[in-house]
Every structure is written in structure tokens, then in C-alpha cells.
Image 1: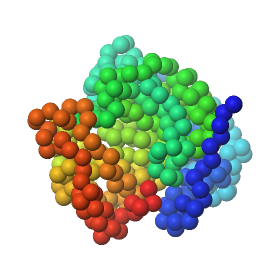
Image 2: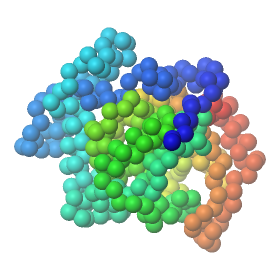
Image 3: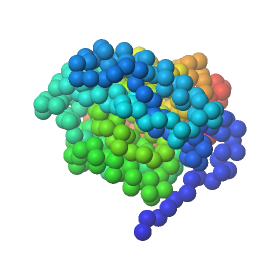
Image 4: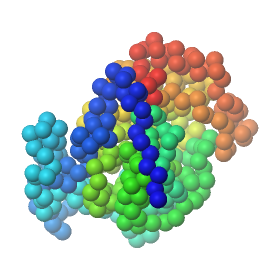
Length: 367
């Protein structure tokens, strides 16, 4: 028999900023609002979709259909209509997104590494993932931020980053897990929901290489459950456009301010420009319900933490920030060339970060 877990105590929602900024998220959890992906499935595509459509045609159709989606979303949220009152279209917005994702995987650019390999014929890029996903685990997580638990976490193996300090390198780099088709993701979601999950938390490793299978799984799911994107956010603009309409909640990492340090730590280019672009897109075009995770690192508070908090304050001011002290030197961080990060963050450094967040009016205590 499944053990049903309850939502966190209502006491956490007595905080006015939490209840205001995460109002729609909480309403979905309580069954008072409708998950965005379900609304996408009731949104008819603007123009017919057929085998002759090239990727440009599909994107044009997608952008026009988004306007229809936003109207329907607004009408449902205001109580002007309900999901059951809407006709089920022959081809819906989620169908269109899935079709685009299936084309992207043939010339893969789900992330900003843009390997442009054809994963459908067995080619693999930096992520080393083929058509099927690799799932390392799935369970009810009670260690996430208080508003998010119990969270139905689905951990994918693989990551488009190569962080030298990765604490999950067994799944992110060594790809430990089971290769599965998208139908397995449907079953996992249903199981987690039956066990009491209040959201489906796509995480890893990183979920980015699995955009196509996530979309396919949501076409088969019919539960009113929050969809949560938990990621390093190094997505391509195309992937963000596919996800922004259907994700109810965003849990992005924002680790580095200096691109040179990001390159040295994670092996990626243009970190700041890509990740901040995507977080701001989720904020301005998407649900706006965001908890940014910032992992404080030794010797980096004034270099990374301060300017990151400044950016949040100016660009995405209604976001929460989890100022995290969990860094520890794992994986390759003990090597001689990484002596500057070969220790935990000190309590003095953490206090410096939190004091600066308070000075800037950042909401961090709630999460």
C-alpha cells in the first residue's frame, strides 16, 4: 500500500510573499487551478500540421498558436471557462511542440552546446544520450525547498555540464541508470502522483537532453499536477520556447557570474548570457514562479554571489533565491589545479552572502 504524504504545513503559506508570488503554483497543488500542460492539450493549433511542414513552418505555427494558448490560459484562470468545457482539438499545442522536438533531435540543439548530431540514427553528442532517456531514480523527495515537498523527482542520468565539483557525477558523467522509452516516464509520473507528489520534478544530472521524451510523456498524462523544471538552464532558445508554456514552476541553478570561471569549472561557453537569458524568459514569458538556486562557493562570494543577487534584484525581482551552503569538494575538486575550491564554504562567507541578500531585499528565508 502506498503511503500518502501531505503538503507542507499551511503555516509556511502564512508568509505573504510566498503566498503572493507562488499563488498559481499553490492553487494547482490544491486543485483550484489547472496545470499549463493540460491547457496546452486543449489549445488548437493555428494552422494544420502535416508531413510537408518544415521546421520553420512549424515554428511559425507554434508562435501563432501561443497567442491562442495565452488567451485560453487567461480565460481558465479567470473562471471564464473550464477545461471540460473546451473541445479537444484534433491537433493541439502540445502535439505541435512534440513534433518540433522530434525534429530537433535529428539535428540536436536542445542545449546551447548545439552538437547538431542525429540522435535518431544513433549519433551522440556531449550528453551521450540517444533517443531513449536514462533514468537513474525516481522517488518522493522531502528534501527540496519547503513549498515543493513532497516532490515527485525523476532523476535523469547525463548532463551537458562537466562540473569538476559535481556531487552527482555517478549519474551526470558516468550515466548510471536504466535506458527507458517515454512511456516509462508516464508510468513514473502516475506512480509518484499516487504516492502523494504535489509536483513532477524533472531533474538529473540534467533533464535538458530529454525534452522530446518529456513532451511525449505529457501527451499521455491526464493528471492535474504541477510540472517543475529543475535544471542548470543551459538550454537553447528553441528548447526554452518549447517548455515555457507548459512548465508551471522553475527551479534553475545560477552558479557563476564570471564566464571564465564557469568555463574552468563546467567546461561551457557563455554561461552568464545563456543562463540569465533563459531565467529571464521563464520570468517574463512563462509562469514567473521561480526559485533560483545559487550554490555559494569558497572564495567566490564577492565575485559571483554579490553580482548574481544584484542581477536578480534588477531583472527578476519576484523570484525567490535559495542561497545554498551545500558545496563540498567532490569529484575532481581535490586536484591540485582546483585548490581555490578545495574546501567548504565558511560560515563567515555564508553570512556575508545572506547579509547582502537582505540588503538587496532578496526573498531567500522562505526557501
